[in-house]
Length: 330
Image (cartoon, rainbow, N blue to C red; front, top):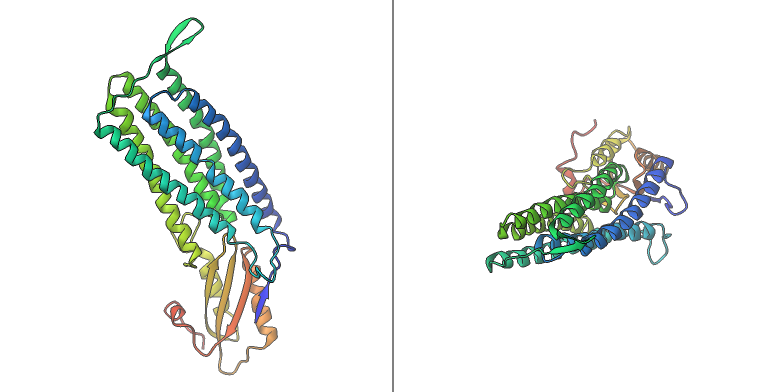
């Protein structure tokens, strides 16, 4: 028997809806900051490889917030006969898009910076006339890098607080991108300072450090995004551990007084979970419609992320669940 929450007509819990509204405002603020940062870095970029890498990295930073905003907008569309599961997967697709952009550009920048180091490319930074005085452009570059490092630190920390309660991996990836942003700014500052000290290699070396960080973020996020789309076991937003709600779902089903043993397959649909519960009734008990419906309601009440539940009475659990079924009730 299956039961479906109509998420489009059923509002999110108020605290979750408030967190989602804050996340949307943060992403719009991020886009505005990025427009200003990209313009400032481009104006003082000069011939520095590290500055060029930082500028491209800033351009890439547009992808996660835009993907988040589109993904959240798509999930609000109602389910239809053609799309019976709704549009929750839009969050997962947005995660793949953002991760792929990171991976491709990280790889390109590593190769480009390494080639400049291998070919002994000596970057030069000239001067600029300001108020009748010639000023070394490197000072402006370093000042720009310090200023542009501040917004990502603040925005990233605010997003990290919202990503776990919303279970939104695109938002978490964007917070990761913000971390890469301020690290990029600091590395670029070191590279430009190296040029000023006559260390020609410091610029390309700093660019490689930046690009390697981007590449690592791309690989980590792409693996997690693809795993989500092929229905891997749901994990926490940092992709390090199984999601704790999985244990709660299994424990609830096994705790029903008419159930001998039980297990659940859970799909991570982006921000919400779809649950397939399998229950083996006790010998003297019947899985009546009322009992099944009460069990479904109990799962919905566990957490707002449980948005679709199917419970199937079976004689034996599917083999993939038996190993984790735990002690049976007698």
